[in-house]
Length: 222
Ligand SMILES: C[S@@+](CC[C@H](N)C(=O)[O-])C[C@H]1O[C@@H](n2cnc3c(N)ncnc32)[C@H](O)[C@@H]1O
Image (tube, rainbow, N blue to C red; front, side):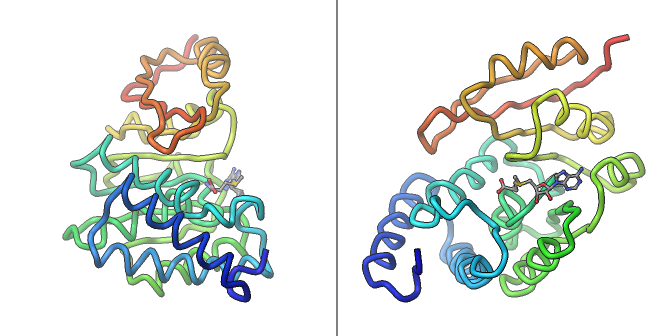
């Protein structure tokens, strides 16, 4: 798909944007930031695979709304850590949405240099409160010293691994919010072999078979 060269593709994306903003409304300022982010993502997508090409016509509903819906599950959270940010979902979207909240900050952790470079550029062009860490997740979460209210991950790893990644941050008081697909029950069963957790499941507002797993407390089984 070549969205910028096709009027039909532009129209499709515009109607997808309208559907997404009806589902997860944002302020005018946030919408402008998200527009800049999407424009950059489409530019970079030609040289770096940031999202699955099949999802390009539905960038707003599949990726932007999917990310924005997390805000309602942690309305007071100002300090976020997004693990394995890739093309910026949900991290960059959250940073765009939190830009008007004084003092808010989103940390984005990504181990691939090219993707981290994209994330830095996305934070710059959107003027959002984000910091990109080019790092392995394991290296950074163990020595995290700042405040963290919420830790997120999407399309990163099976749930039992995500719980392990998030454990040091949840022990510091963070709530974990993981975006998961239809196999969430099997992933929860597997996770409880290794971890004592009391997850809350929220069905995704973006349709399909998606779930958000919210976890406030993590203890390793001995
Ligand atoms: C499939 S992508 C998902 C990206 C994004 N969260 C999304 O939903 O579109 C997973 C990303 O996590 C990064 N990643 C995987 N394991 C990681 C690790 N141990 N430390 C840091 N980044 C990691 C990968 O480089 C990749 O960019």
